[in-house]
Length: 93
Image (cartoon, one colour):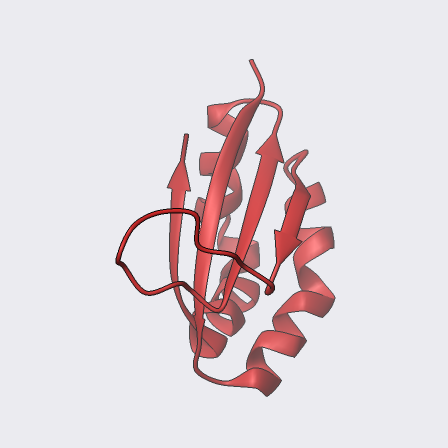
């Protein structure tokens, strides 16, 4: 069954995050994943928490594929660019 993940980002290093974006699509595709939607233009509908600088909704063929993407040792450098570029939270739905 298709699985989705929500990634929130709080910008730390714009250059590192730009380098991550160049590799992110291929890294996701390696495990059948893709970005369903992403935006830095967020509108608060409810709640008092601070908005992140960006949000992405990721799609994977299933939960195992999402876990394989995050655990893939060959993608460690790509994931490191993301965490250098932004404080992130990725939640699998």
